[in-house]
Image 1 (cartoon, rainbow, N blue to C red):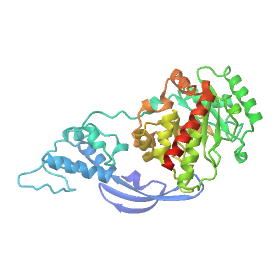
Image 2: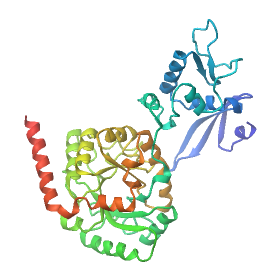
Image 3: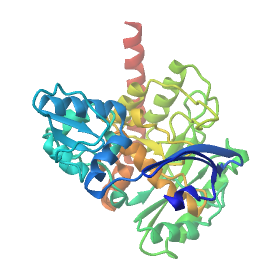
Length: 406
């Protein structure tokens, strides 16, 4: 308590008691400003810690459902524990400790178990179906240990700070088995985008670097701009040289929803595209980005085997959690990528995983969790028959057009 009240970031004390304290702190914003936030401290007995953790971390809607479930089973649930209802008690909830011994309080797990539920991961506690799911069996959300590949990374060839070899060594040091070098395409001159001729030499440089870093596979790729009409920034012949293509929107981000949807779907239909990078192009607090029909985009991604990216950078988190869940419901694959520009960016993975977990992602639907053999097979799924795939994409567009006319 004393250490909390003496934090150097503290600018104001809002409340001070033996078991409850609130302060206001200021921190430097990574973008150069200052942000202020309230921080609360609760001091809880160890035997009641699980109940307090569950209560204060919420969400409110989830907690209401748990309390209703407790009442239906003859219990009262509050921040101090799960208690049997006393004779004559109608079930009003109280935030004061009970004198009777709780049925469960020390851990979240024992509270959920007493309510007939599996433990629910905190990211899912939003009253969006998680309680019904917890009656059926355990959750199998994606974990950090499941990630084997980073599939969106930049080097000094465009706007990154690491050389190809430095990037590969940083990936290997983090236990990754695959790293994709995906520098910017030519429509991003401000980011050092590569023209087609420079890209060809860059591909050779990437492949030569493979002999210098053992134990991690280096893929030669590109983050290719999706132009306003949905076409890609390189011709097919250039794209065919790449091991992986991350197609991303960077411009024309205020398009109407229908046009944005058609744009992204056209990119997905291209036989060389593997991942749709940060699909809306949003920057949190700065730019709203595109507002496509995510269900339609996810359906197209499923049909063509393209993964939709959760960009893990803290300014993007794009796809957002609700979009991840919608994409999964439509059968799409997901990629969770750090969009690495400097070594510290690898650490943004935790933000991407939290977002993906909030969207109910498991490792089986995430391409970054594939074994090396499975990942390479997925990357080559359409490339051997490019002409046929392009014809199929054209047929798909014509079918949608005919359906729209009907």
